[in-house]
Amino acid sequence: MYGIAYTPYRVIDECPTLEEAEEDIAILMKHTRRVRTYTTLCESVNRVLMRHASEGRLSVLFGVWIDNNDMDHLEIQ
Image (cartoon, rainbow, N blue to C red; front, side, top):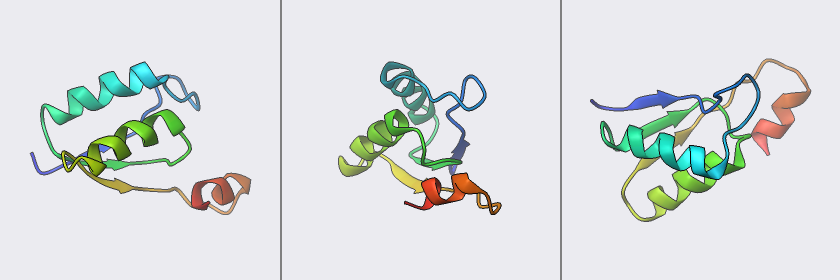
């Protein structure tokens, strides 16, 4: 598989814990080394993805959803 698009939410608008993010990314890495996210707002996910990326084990594309609301500024920061 070339890559996987990943949205981290298990519950709407609730970021996973660090442990849950580790579990999710471990599952994804069994199938691909390329991941695209749909948000940058989950610090737990960002930490896990960036660690794997900095070790050269994963390519990451951080995606943001821009629809002209207050959350956009958080995504872009």
